[in-house]
Image (cartoon, rainbow, N blue to C red; front, side, top):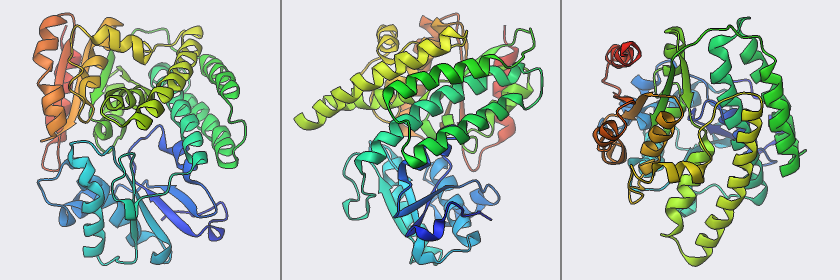
Length: 400
């Protein structure tokens, strides 16, 4: 099923990564490329919900079902010695069921009969210390570049594809840059801040040359829980649905979430961690501003940089809501409405505690304070109906 290339026999382990970030994982996987690990981002979709439900308690949220099902189905179809397989489970480690995904996956894999397969946790909280992927400095540096390159490519893809004159030209340019940047990340080449800023300009210029139709389309923002927001499996191909309905979608970049995480955890951490978070915010902020500058220079759209977005949102949200995606959900809604993206799809897994408190609990207040905006909340779940979700989104598209 998966073609394990790039001299994978020379690496000790095959590192399977679940589909979580459509635009970012094709690059982020190279943060883990080493003599020890050959990273593979999973693409299998068939039977993953059904398989997940066999091994995951139905009280767990939808992303856990999908991730577990995808992992187990991939192991079944991957013709590799089980002792060489490692499963990577990223987790933020907050007061969210996502912190339990690693344990859930580990039990499911054992129950499915794959006791030789090891599950590794990737988190910044020191959880699962005995089973945690060891983070090396080069991994962090490569991940920084992959994150921002993923952001700019995603923003450009979503803004141009609905208008392209020649079908599939936008995705071809996207793939071209994925290939170029993958080689740099894999081999550790051109990984300087100066080179990244030059690439921001080159990428924006390249996409700006794509011929587009001179038509006006509705721009629909997508906010919400991380997995559902960034993964087509979790949001039931919402971006494609919106484009098929004649709309343009907007999903804010992952770097805003990374900065929200650093900002909201800075005051809750020890002195050394706080210093590291503060330094991270400074570095991320400078790179993010350079990315936004490149986008705007060539006529593309972006929300304000993180610190300005936080200032915009201050009258509307409480920064004490910092569980899961927390106040960032409300801040992105404020940012969208403030910058001519007045229709918002707020998506979350059914029963997601942080999103129901920090997201859904805030929507009525935001709707009153931002009367020009329209917010529609949708829940996704293994027992839910795509048609119901699409109908709610269609009402948003049709409203004046």
